[in-house]
Image 1 (spheres, rainbow, N blue to C red):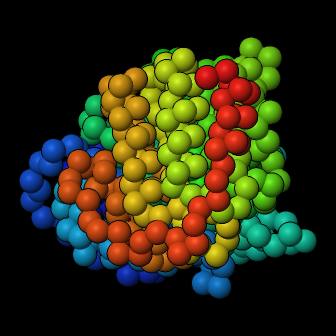
Image 2 (image 1 turned 180 degrees about the horizontal axis):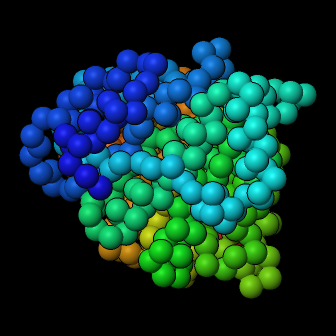
Length: 379
Ligand SMILES: [Zn+2]
């Protein structure tokens, strides 16, 4: 972590083709220590991985920055500088050949990882941006673990939860959360880390990279069956790791009640049994009812309550150690309100009004699915 002035100078020194977000500049203002010290990671490289017509584009971060500025949140946050993940750190979860492939596509100007699928794009800056995202996740999680800040949120792009050992998919290149969990283990000797993914799509990459590892509990709440078609409830982890993979799939129309109830009745008891020393959350907001890429009916208020539950669980189990990293969310208005709401929860400041409100269509009832999940996980 470094001071705000150094943070700005570093950003300026890096240079960027996009104009620096206003809010970053306001970080140079003297700060009042808030009730909670909440760290934030943002780097110019995250704006340079960009394809305007793609749903996962840099405007998402530009809009988030504007909303944080409009709410006066930037001046309350503690910047944590990102850095490039090293080759060794990437190789904790990705194969050397895959890392070379990503480097090579970027070096030759970019393109799609798999042109036949055409979902995950790269630009000439993507290799650097993805390394900075993984390194940013490492730095934030270490800062939270070391209590330099109480909690934090890394505004990373490109995202990571679909990234497999040797494959990019679903807009994801390197699995930053799993790399950060490994960093906590290797650099700090942490024995148990929980990764909780509330993006509406199943965190298949995170599951794949951790399902045989009893030291990492991977939890995912997601729409199912739905892209990427993985994430069945019965997949609970392999061998010694049985019980540490927790899939919470819900069909279309699930909303605040399904997400909040499954947290209380399945995820929290599983966390209490696992006793994590640190919690990472992959914070995707594409379960919002206005999001075009899925069919769940979460509200901004629901996301605020879910993040508050995460914060309470971290407080009960691991000294409040909670670090979020940005996942999906492709309709800008609910995305920016949800992200800003998560920051307000992390800071412990007063919550802004949910101006979008709940879904006009009622949530579907998933109480039976909840009972099935409780049986599978014996909670
Ligand atoms: Zn998603």
